Length: 133
Image (tube, rainbow, N blue to C red; front, side):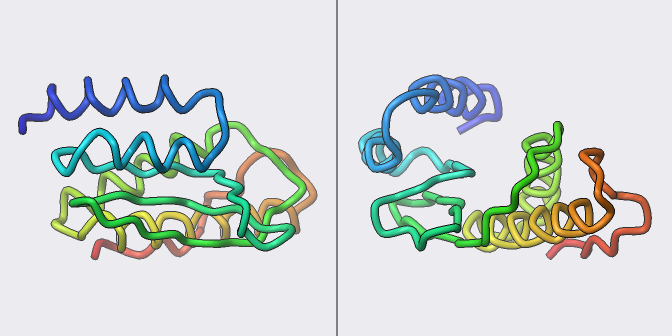
């Protein structure tokens, strides 16, 4: 599959997931088939622990879930940062599940740092991002 095909399929999934409940999102990813890999952030499933959120990754039909504590801040750009961190790891050959889990952990660490600073502007300067893998 070339990048253009991946982008078109990924965009369709993102649009379909804009509304509805997270369980339907997982079913939608599985229903597309094994030819697509996807990561969905900010999921709250029925069995997600109270006060937590999840990133769900689907690769080759396998679903993995990464759970982190929800924080009371919502700075702009977290999705862009997640996508950049994920893309860097995927480009380095890191499997999607591991790449999504690491990106989720780093986003959470940045947001924790941002909350501690008492600001809505993400505190990225000097953050010790890990190099892929």
